[in-house]
Length: 265
Length: 298
Image (cartoon, rainbow over all chains, first blue to last red; front, side, top):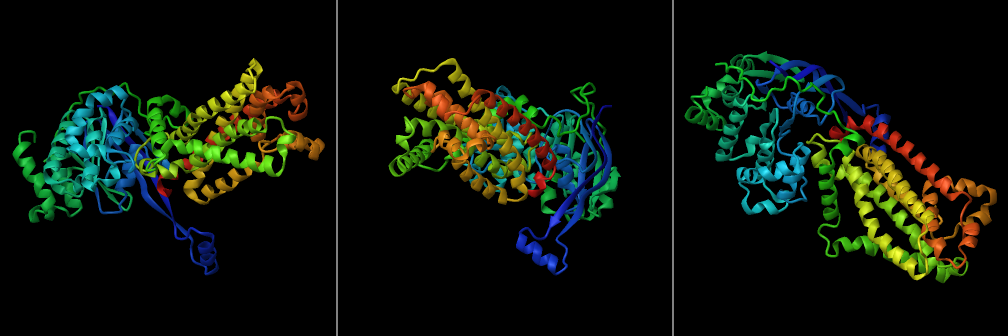
């Protein structure tokens, strides 16, 4: 087996500043209030992921999932510890793609693909496929700033998924997609997983994590609270009761999984 | 239920493990020329987006400034009697001054302006200041063509040394502008005040160079102290431009060289290019230090 992602004692600290102008800072200092505070968003996280594993990254809001994703994706560098990856990385970070709001969908598509490491020829070859997947139609030539959050996520996902990546990071971008699009994404992500690429999936939906992943990492206030078997991880988070209640979102995936991917699993 | 780990299609065992942020820095920018090309093209179309005159503004702007300076300096201060072909004298300087001001101003804001991309995509962030510099360089081309045509009318014909002076001036401003933009673009993320600092500095630039007044006046007033005036690389770049274009248009170039140019202007030019390369390296170091905190502070 080849290792795909290795995190060793990764720590990322954020400085929270309460005041930003000279006036505010001097007033606060005169009153003896604190002007800034540091916060560990990711705290001493270590794990090793083999190529072909599919990881469900779970945890409450603010537990450091997005920050960890940014560290793996290379947007951020850890303050201490190391993150090492093997091969090309693609995916969506913290809901939605990095698009320039003033550019059209088409321009953003080329730019985004280039940032993800695609060459001009590769982009042209996959252009039609990406556009078809994103289902934007004539909106492709209007400014991305005018897109709905769903359309934004669609285009971002469509580009990222068509990159020949070795590691695919998927965030909760899917949450803003409508039901048919969500199904399409899940199907595509299962294809990626079955192709033996490393999948890193951030989700609150226990059902889809169960269908998609073979390992769960739970973050709690920046620390690894649990790392291991999927069912145990979901139980650890006390998310299993949601399954029975059947939250609307999860049911989609649940149904879908049963209908179309039953034989895969 | 636990899924089996699937055997990969692609064998990655010979691909090394590397930090996902590797390959950043100015060298990383050079490696990704396709992305740089896209950014430059985009920047050119986006700079004047939503405006009716569009790209024309980058000519209207220097043109009006030229007319103001020329009108003011020759009409009011009668400098045109002292400086031959005063229009050429101003315009030659203005080409590089504008190149610098645009690179510095737009480059400083480049990272904040592209925050939606910087926050979510991994790429060398030096890409944005570099792209801004190239866009400004692109705008220099038509101005140089106008300048050349005007000079030809005055009977100027480029000598090899003129061409060398011109290349040195553009090189000097390009590297210096990039170095300043790189340093300030990162600083601007932390305190937006730097955007305003740049505006103030850019005002100083216009008057700290021998563009709207001849270098002869500086030498006359300051005497020996004029050598300190020449420590300003922008002043040297403007003088190089005048060495390349203006000197050749005057009736007696040898006389103009003696009165309006410092000694060893070419040597000074080479030294300043070397200085800006050093400054660029320092800027890169500062940028790399600040870069870690950029995504969270945007």
